[in-house]
Image 1 (cartoon, helix red, strand yellow):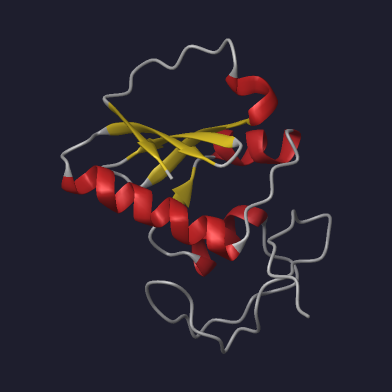
Image 2: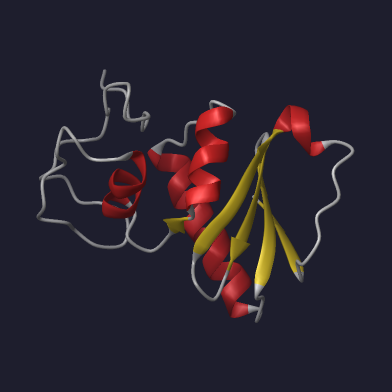
Length: 129
């Protein structure tokens, strides 16, 4: 059984083979062995981008997003956009993500242990998936 998790550059990248369709649209570019985590995420899920800050938070907090979670995130961003949101807090399982809806960019990521006692500012909506 294949593991569909996306891993950081220091670890193997466990994506489906490059000829498999991705959510949203199909990419013909193969995944390169030297690609950065951010490049792999953007290639794999073309609609959502991750800021450098968000990528650092994901790595430092050892947060790994699998294909299902990326699809949920994309769906949450689309829902927020339909409601006219600009900056949204997306709560997904044991993870909080602050996302710029207009730019479809994850600004920061917070794991479950850090969510409590946190104050989220500069958001105009929340999506719980």
